[in-house]
Length: 264
Image 1 (cartoon, rainbow, N blue to C red):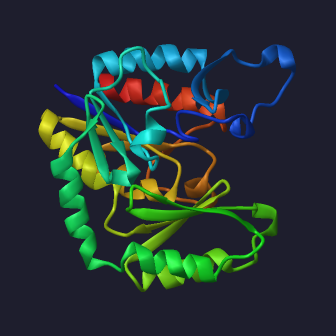
Image 2 (image 1 turned 180 degrees about the horizontal axis):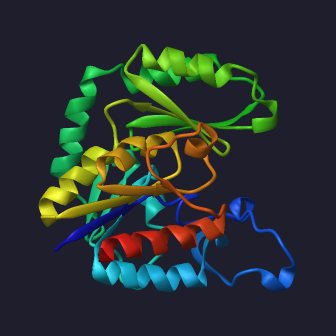
């Protein structure tokens, strides 16, 4: 029986130093493995126990990383000794097969997005609503936009106002760390995961994620888990199992949970 395991990456499986959430004496800290470099510097980590457990999970299931990262950003991450056969990037905008973009899926996604407001309209609105609290403005795969903000200086109600504006135009928002994402509502990880499930003939599906952009994916799977931190935790979302741990230790717990459920 093929079990498809779809997991978000950032703050679900992999963690930057700012997101470790490690507490206790130094001698109790876990050994960590760096899985991503950026500009020659270490950026993202998993615990060594998580890395070992993930290798076993990937050998026994069809493991699919599912991320809002672009394909270029995803390719910096080296979670496994052998890269997974499938990966989902740009929040479902790209399916990578053996590391290469599937052009038919990318075309189909862009055709669906014609029903919502164009990206240029969202970009122009973000420019008008900018201020000193906005550090960067970016687009991803010509599909969606995001801004990097100073959370401490973010005006009260700014994200809520942006959310309302986006909703009226068929878009949605997500605040993750220092990034505020604006994405077409129809651009979902779940749609791409369902496509991979059909291609692999999966008999069961499991999922993990931490943000509002993961809600459809977690609801689509037969069983799912989220960490006890992040956007879903902050909003009290109850549609999945929840880890006891926070931070990088939650990533380890998520992999253990997925392994147990896959073996059932």
